[in-house]
Every structure is written in C-alpha cells, then in structure tokens.
Length: 277
Ligand code: TA6
Image (cartoon, rainbow, N blue to C red):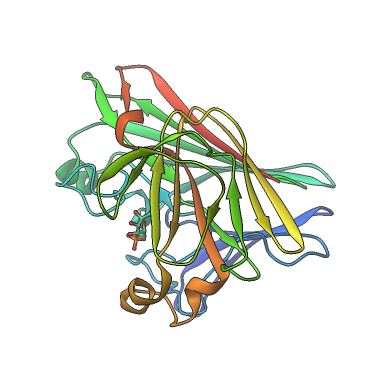
C-alpha cells in the first residue's frame, strides 16, 4: 500500500507498507525517515525532537547530503541543499507483495543556481523490501563539468551506543574530523566519546553490531564512509536532538567525501548506492 500523507503543518510524505516492511519518505529532501521490517523495531533512528517542517532538515533517517558533504564547499550550507529541497515524485511501483519502488527527482532551479551555478538532475530510487536500498544518480545537464561530494547520511537505531560496534574499517585510511589528523584505523569502532571519522578506500561491507541485531551495509559508487556519534556535549548543542539522543543512534554514512570527490562531465552521471540489511 502506498499512501500520500501530511503532518498537521502540511509537511508531506509517502507512507509505504508491504509484506516485508514499512517506510515513510518525505518529499523534502527525498528523505527516508522511517524503515522497519515487519515485526521488527525500526532500523532507522529518528529523533523524538526532530522538526518536520519545510526548510528544516529532519534529524534522523537518511538525509541526503548533496552537492557537498560537510563544509567541503564553503559557499553552500553544511551538507549542501538537497535535504531542504522539494523532490518530485516520478513513480511509485508495487513490484510484488514484498517489494515497493519509489522514484523521486530534483533538478536545478533559480534558487539552486544562485547557490551552486550548475544544471543537474538527481534521480533517487528507493527500494523497500527485506532490504532497504537507496540509489542516488547525479546527472550533469550542464555544459561544463562539475564536482560533487555527497553522503547518504544514515542514522541507525541502536539499543545502547556504549555496546554497539562498527566493523569492516580495520586498516583503512581515515581522517578524524575532530582533530584533522589522518591515520590508519585498526580494529572495530566503539563509542565512549564523540566520534567523527571519515574513512577512505572502503571496498567492502560494513557491519553494525548491536545487542540483538547485526546490520550489514554494502555500497556501490562510493569508497568513503563516515562514522559519527556526537556524544553528550555536542548532542546537547545540536538542533533536533534531545539530551539523551546520542545513546540510541550511530551514523554510518555511504559517501563520496574528501578525497573521494566525483567530477561529472556534461551528459554523464554518477550513482551512489547503499544496500542496508
Ligand atoms: O557526518 C557527520 C557530520 O558531518 C558531523 O560533523 C555532524 O555535524 C553531523 O554531520 C550532523 O550535521 P548536521 O548538519 O545534520 O547537524
């Protein structure tokens, strides 16, 4: 079942229910803010204090950071403008009883050209089954090449951050965004303080190990991954967060960040994809 809904303030979203899973996708930002397999607790975390208001980013789910990750492009807002932009629904297709596909798009506008002087078209394909699959294609409709950095900035629900582990980044080059230090990471990532790490040359699956549930993330079109938790102090200062929010989520972001930027020539495209199971 596919339903078109809105919060009392008119904030629109699509609700999908099939035999495998349920999901909610906001038109603003093409933002998946709920995904749960039938009979399971949600896989994605969304903040109890999140805004659902046009012009404000949802805190949680899968924000799309585009055409810049972080402050990679100082003339743009942090994480770009796609997450504040209204995507158009291109199609919604119930492939079978257990699989639904939603396709949305975004293209340049008068506002976007003032921020970022390039013509583009984004095609976002979200496939909902036992697996959550998100693919973002950037098509260069301009006459000049342009460079993007980006991320599917996924917030994963965890039962307790202090026992959660992220696996699969052992021996990978990494930048600590808090200290700007580059080093080779070793072992699993555990959480006992603020963590903001950008990994490069990532070519395998990532595992989130949380008591009671392991999650596997694979990707294509991406060789960088960001792992983030704000911990106590930063969480207390952030918009859309409750004081204890940091305890129940970790971000594992499928990205093209820092050295993994993408130059896209006129008429060409690049697709980044995350498969979460
Ligand atoms: O992806 C990690 C990060 O870049 C952190 O540095 C932190 O700022 C986080 O994103 C959230 O950013 P936001 O703009 O959504 O508050």
